[in-house]
Amino acid sequence: MTLKQIPRFIKGLLKSSGHKIALSYKPKRSPWGGGNQVLEQLVAHLQDRGHRVTFRLEPGVTAILLVDPRPADTTTFGVSEISAFKAAHPQVFCVHRINECDLRKNTAEMDEILRRANVVADYTVFISHWLRDYFIARWFDPRWPHDVIQNGADPELFYPAPAHDYRPGSRFKIVTHHWSDNWNKGFRVYQEVDRLIASGELGDCALMVIGRWPQEIKWQVTATHPPTRGRALAHLLRQNHVYLTASLWEPCGMHHVEGAQCGLPLVYHEDGGGIVEFGRRYGVSFRDDPVRALRQAQQQYATLHRQVLAQAPSGVRMIAAYEAVLTGKIHPASRGEPDLAAGEAGGT
Picture 1: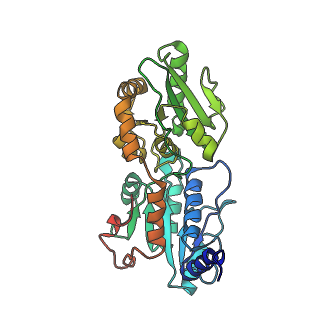
Picture 2 (picture 1 turned 90 degrees about the vertical axis):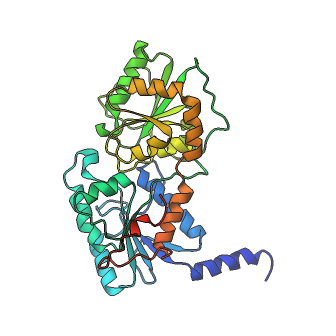
């Protein structure tokens, strides 16, 4: 065997000894929701670790990750297919990642869709403690094996600038970005901040909005950019000082995570759902007065900046936690015999 053949040989050994994991959702290579970014990272990580990733239920599959039970062009198989496959292959382990709820976008059917889908799951992953508690209050039994794995972004793309450039008295640069144009994403607040900058009340600030927004909004002085992803998005985020999110009842969200990993402290709404769990570490909250929160973030910027650098989310930690669940490094009890400690396993 030559030196050039050794890496290929080792990679072959890893593949032969790894797991075969079926994902019910095929990631898009374009700007999309936060779950898409999670799956892109997970697929790359699993393959690098020698596991085989498939988007079909086929022979040799050892674990299934059910991502979204709703039919869509990105969905490769659904709950009925999983149920039939598990009946024929009872040893296959199914993990259900729950990242939605009705409260988020004022819908009426999502909670029930998730309840029905969860029947096929051996293990459930919620993307925030807030979302777990939301479903415990509705239908999820906390004795069922589960974990909370919070979102993290790809650190090769989303990382802080070498040094922040904000100095008191200089322009305070604010940014937000959303794929969805739903009003619950906080657009009334962003529109008000735009108005206050234009009127001079926040004249020493600048706002950047990236992505999509309701058609009714006519920005006055805000710098806008179309939906962007990856390195281009991270480059735009790093041009700013603080991340503003007024999104309501988010299961977790990826937008503020990408901002935090780019070194931006968080200004967030008190009813932000899972976002609050992040903001408490390196941010300032508001309910009715975003101006007060922005001014506080401006005054305390050096401290908040140190906090976000020390406590930012981690895509590395996130995908390692998913791998541990999908490959059996965590061995939960069956759903029929609940493991009361299951909720403490894995990474958050």
